[in-house]
Amino acid sequence: MAKLHRAIALAIISKNDKLVSAEVKYLRKYLGLSNQDFAKVMGVGEETSSRWANGVEMGASAENLLRILVLRGLKPE
Image (tube, rainbow, N blue to C red; front, side):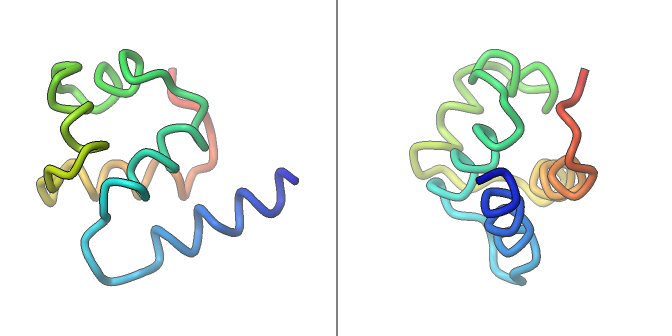
């Protein structure tokens, strides 16, 4: 199952389009982060990370950081 989840995560971050809310939510869960921890790792407030999961577009820098975190495949500290 872990290999399947990794393959899905890599497919999501490999696309050229902006990430949509369902993808952001999937990637956050793939990294094993709660919304609170995700916000800390991303350097934003919990409200912002919640908005990303509910339809507000991420900025380019935040999206690039998320893609890098997933590519590394490690839960950030």
